[in-house]
Length: 142
Image 1 (cartoon, rainbow, N blue to C red):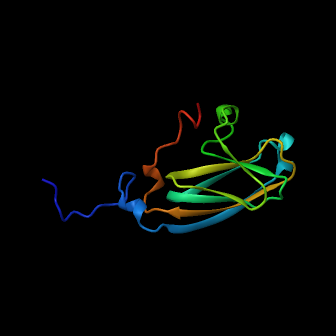
Image 2 (cartoon, rainbow, N blue to C red):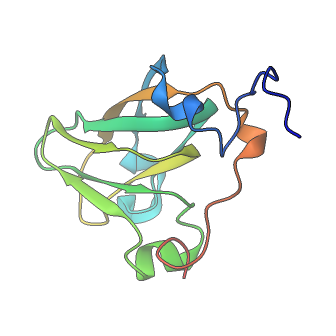
Image 3 (cartoon, rainbow, N blue to C red):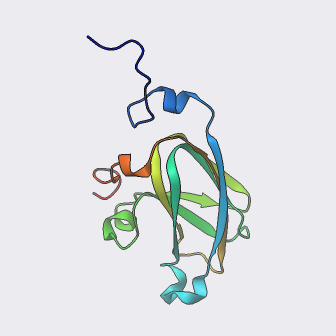
């Protein structure tokens, strides 16, 4: 018989971990196209301190710079070749993703000239990133 007084702990399958308000996390960065051949391989990896329940990525670049949001590194040739990314075009354009993850990647779109800048706001859960599996498979790396 299950103990009715047992306190649940945060975890990937714990619904309450996603129902409560998240802890705030804010960061940003610049992708310098001058440090990469052709500017198309500039990439940033954002590792969250806890699993997120949602995040918002804001393209703060000039209007001519497009960013790509993806869940695996572009060194995995299938990410770009398989179009496993979302393009964020135009200054101050934002995308909000309501999904659990422990890291994301942001890269310059291949045709963009100049540096890409972005800001991220995330809702952190109380779930350890060690509990989150790697995101791979159909639509991500294949």
